[in-house]
Structures are given as C-alpha cells and as structure tokens.
Image (cartoon, rainbow, N blue to C red):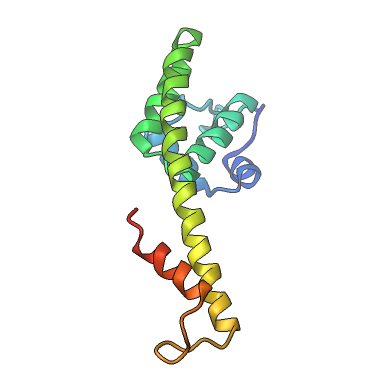
Length: 142
C-alpha cells in the first residue's frame, strides 16, 4: 500500500507532531493506521479528517478518555450517533462555561490595562468607575 500520507506529511497537514500522532494511535484514539509492506504508516483521508476533529476536541480541553470513547463510538458505526451526539452536547456545555470564564477574565485584564493607561497608581489614585467594576469582577466566584 502506497496511498495516503506518510506520518511526516500527516503531521505537517495537521499541525501536530509525529510523536503526537503516534501517541494518539497508542492511546486508542485512532483505528489501526494502514501500513506499507515496509511497515510505514499511511494516513487515509478519513484518518486525517478524524484527526482534525479529535485535535479540536483536545483544544477544547476534552480529556483523552472522553476523546477515546468518542473515537471508539465512531469506529463502532452509525448506530452510535446518538451516543456521540450526547458526548459532544455535554462537552459543549463545559466549553461554553470555559468561554464565559475567559470572557470575564479578559474583561478584568482590559479594565486593569485601562487603569494603567489612565496613570492609575494603587493606593494613591482615587476610586473611579473602572476600579469599582474591576473590584466587583475580582470578587466574583468562578
């Protein structure tokens, strides 16, 4: 078999290292990758597409065990679509919560930068709308 991408070509196309590709295979995130007669991996289009999606799941913070479960369900066939959807819907809730937290953190950073741009000095500058909002955000839980 000579069709498909080498591990080097696949890693370049995906923007991840060959080491990561081998790890994904060992961790059970991928089906067995076809190999040449000489034992070299050849990534098919469907392997690359799955890897692209799994990489996105990892970027969202999905744990390896959950990515593995999702990948196993993909390999099990179309009858697992409801279970796959459930995994993704549950993870979406977590990602949306992370986004909200990041947005609040970004707002804190922007307020602090704004204070520095105003020449604000801790303990000397008077309280203003910006410092009050910053204080409220810093006191929020979560």
